[in-house]
Length: 194
Image (cartoon, rainbow, N blue to C red; front, side):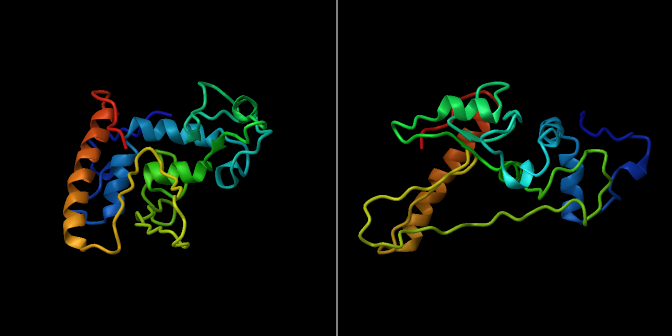
């Protein structure tokens, strides 16, 4: 699927001048993004119910466009991926993110929408980013596992220290990580270590 290209001679193919509907404007930019168009094609190729329900170990669907830990090989199917990454003797197995989670995290849309779709708020549903707060429930625990997508960063705050100095330091570190991530996406530099 190619990204949507409006005919510049037809005003009706663009939002009206002065449009203040943020989702409408976001959709017009997103549907013109070639990476979005390609991702929609990949998600459409999944078997029924795999987008919401996830891929089973026996699935023949290809993993391109999905987040996997460790990463999938090019053109690898779920069944091949699990065969390659499962080591029962060490208790290790690969993990494939639910396609809906990967898609939401990447595009902030609830479901893939074809780029030819005209803006309709009942179809094109952008989801707001939610800030999550996670902490130890058990004050005796020594470590804590936190799942992160490649476009996320975790920042630790102390509950027994003042907020403002921690926030100022966190903002500096966040901005540096965001800049490194943007450069990495452009292929100019590898992402900064976490």
